[in-house]
Amino acid sequence: MKVLSDKNQTETGLNKAGFEQLFDAYYDELQHFIYFKSGDTQVAEDIVQDAFLKVWEMRSTVRVETARALLYTISANLFANRYKRMKLNLKLQQTIIEDRTFETPEFEMEIKEFDRKLQRVLSELNENNRTVFLMNRMDQMTYNEIAANLNISVKAVEKRMKKALEHVRKEIEQKF
Amino acid sequence: METGKNRHIDPSVFSKANFDNLTTDEKIETFVQSYRVPQKKSKAEALELLRSKLDQQSIEKPTRSLRIYWSAAASVALIALLTTVYFYTASSSQIIAGKGQHLEYSLPDGSEVTVNADSKLSFSKSGFSEKRSLKLEGEAYFSVMKGNSFVVETKLGTVEVLGTTLNVYARDNGLSVSCLTGKVKITANGQTVIIEPGEKAELVDGTLKKITNISTDQMAGWRSGEFHFDNITLISIFEEIERQFDVKITTKGLENRFYTGGFTNKNLTEALEMVCLPMQLDYEIKNGNKIRIEPKTK
Image (cartoon, each protein chain N blue to C red):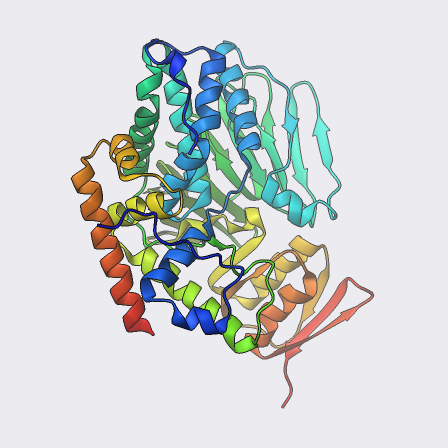
């Protein structure tokens, strides 16, 4: 995970270059964050655009060391305000399936079936649990990082991880 | 406590035998780590878009000329098919997407629009930022910048945007507006309806109806080449295929039949198969662009 260098840490206010550094460092993880909540790439990209625009509007008061958490907060708020809870349907790209020949068609079917079930189970997870789970497992963020970004305690991250994993494990075992 | 740094399994080496030997947790771990979040535009394209919005904010009067660019998703699917028809005069602009085309534009106020095949969008360029009003025949997806009212006039009714993103379908066979974010007000036949995200308004037999619980993927799936239909007449589906592939379709015996499902606009045969197979229809392509469709004969 890319983190901005420490040398700007105590400065208040962003210039265009600093702003674009933020974009470069955090665009992808924020787009993932809203995708984990919404399951919709268009929604994720629109929200993150607007979040960066808002940060630009308030650039004179933004501090570099808190900018990442600020971007998460703004994105989460924009998402909560604009979208009603909709049934979502994750369509993650499974790289195991791409560019691969399988030993037998049966094995290929088994893998695809597992992928389909796993995505369904993930889609059914509670939004907060799913988001934390995927930030950790897909984007390799540590519990500390997640806690800082979402402005929650590490304990809360642990709790959500535990709930997510228990639920996914139980559902997957049941569905096989 | 799980730390997220479990034993990493290289997915390229696992075979049937060792997949079966993995625990459920290891399977989940391997699969989740191998997922990638889909993106419509690359980070570079997103930055480009953001920069264009910042430029518009810093210039008081955004009088930028109309700019053409393709979305990543659409360009992959359509670039081979496309030729651009683009009319431009000092005071008024028309955006015309021919059959088999999707066009994407930035409007003078920074709002963005994707125009579907066989559709026409016109507006007055001068003073657009003060009075945002457009005329639409066909179908278009709008991502509207915040500001004063944004009005889309169609033959069947008027759509006023109170928020940000929406899809408008206004062809001879009907008016349908879906809202992806924000709020939208539709006026038609003296009736007014306000819709919110996940909702859709449709003019059916002169009555404006509100339909709730619609997935945003389906609302404007056509932008990425995926068309979804929920209980729509087969005739309208084939009309959409005509528009997307620029072909002529004649049908026989399909009246009063309805279809729920979809097609993609990447390949004509594939699209026809997707509709014809489940509906028990035969199709025949003549000279590459004339198609005859009728129910399978027993």
